Figure 1 (tube, rainbow, N blue to C red):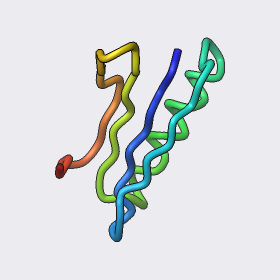
Figure 2 (figure 1 turned 120 degrees about the horizontal axis):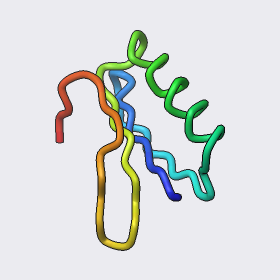
Figure 3 (figure 1 turned 90 degrees about the vertical axis):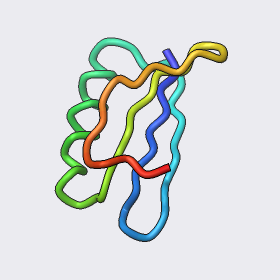
Length: 64
């Protein structure tokens, strides 16, 4: 599974892409993602599959 995270830290949006995320790695990544919500303005975790985008988790009001 390929997961992309977009996090706005108050100044700019940081985008990171993680490949080959399965099982325990996914759970740890999701916990870490939610721990950032006290420091960041907003965030979004997206599953990428071809041209399909599925939002797995998010926090804050997402600005485009």
